[in-house]
Length: 134
Image 1: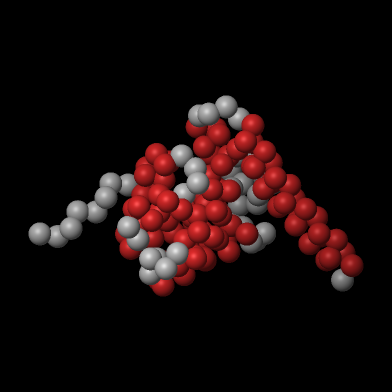
Image 2: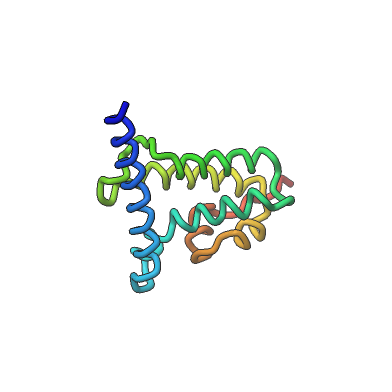
């Protein structure tokens, strides 16, 4: 049991260290694609928190967003976080899918207001706006 707890503690410490590194990189890197990528996961967590509390967001979209936030916070991943570059890839894919789903149900103004990062990144992720049926 003790070995299991030590392993769990090491895993949590690695997860927290990788998040701290992402936040540090997001603040220290010069503006550009690397900074946008480093800030993506912290921006996603902030967006999840903001959208979860927004009354204009439908329940189905809130559920998808909260599940994506839980996926981000979970130490269990398809690709381990300690692998450089590709570690956060599964997190990014899950959050991207959840935001695209929410983007179809929530007005873009609400999503853009909740996104703390560079708006062009979110707009690129969401794709072109859906045209209403005629």
